[in-house]
Image (cartoon, rainbow, N blue to C red):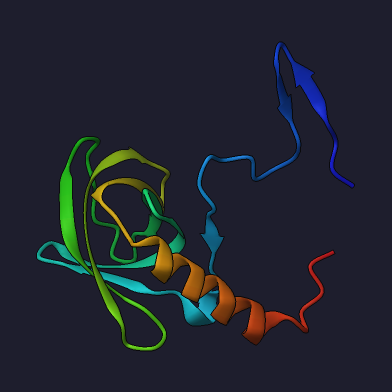
Length: 122
């Protein structure tokens, strides 16, 4: 059940009330961002940003510029460019200045819904 909280003129309707749809990937099908500084698995993704997993304990700094190619389950790639917003321990948030096209986000969403429709999320 989604709880509604009224805050001034805005309503909060649950966990994912972001402006852009965010895909949260299961471990087995996470895309990978390959950069000149290393490779990162993508934990979640939207048109304008991503949460990336730091696998090698490398430090990332706020405002650090990162760019490279995201490779998806079907082999398709998308060039992204952005800056680190913050580090979260074993992951970090990257805000894109050049992001993933909406068409790609929709294709990924469809793929995940098809592959994982049998999984009970409740």
